[in-house]
Length: 326
Image 1 (tube, helix red, strand yellow):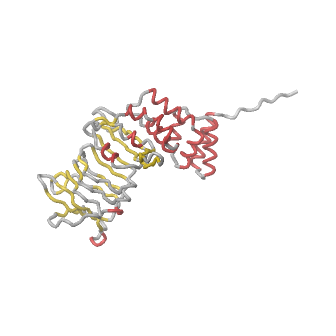
Image 2 (cartoon, rainbow, N blue to C red):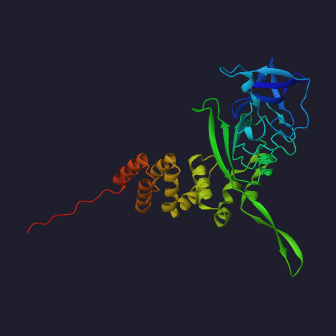
Image 3 (tube, rainbow, N blue to C red):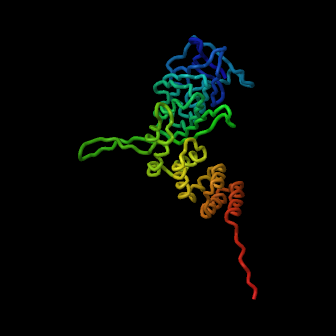
């Protein structure tokens, strides 16, 4: 990959990237200086003019010839990884990146330029490394996007912890607004759909408020689809950061109450980890296991069928009929 950059006040600002891979990984350092800024329109095809006074850094990818490299901008880009050193990204940096699906960065990134995510309708994943505390720019990013966004926080643990990071996974549902006219009264008002806007308010001073997030689930049950609700419940149960006992029971009750439908979704989506979680949490019912087994047959998931049949045998063994001799 080739990176065009400029040296600012003892740091690097990335201007443009060229390469062959739709996954772009920005290095932490270039020419001995930390990469702290990504310039405006860096990944957009809508830039009016290219800078002429730039330096060039090449990563030296094997087997890649200069003529094969193309501008990594617009629909070419699908995933971008920023290093922990990046503090700010410029205006309209992703303008028109309609195939951008995943963005990874750390809590060092706190400055987001205006219009940064214009046209990023397929962005669906944020991976955020919380190295310094609990604050991040996630609220600002979510505020620019209407679609469902799955956010994974990597929370740094203490020095003596077994794992360096703990994962927290959260689903922020979609939302949209619709202009509705009351014709007799000649009044135009805005009607909101989906709970995404409510969930996007679960931040205080740039910190995630997990209690507030969990308290919104009853509202989500009334408005969002079962596929979204199941993801929300499983993510909170399996990555239970700051999850109270009351809210744990709430999510478990929802899963148990819709289990025959949910397990079909899990089998179809090849979510083995979640099926194993059901076993470990003793949430299975006979009807749900039968529904899952039927789905494994239907979707021809041999590995899942074997697992489910074994679970049924363990949990609900067939009782031998008693024989009476005269």
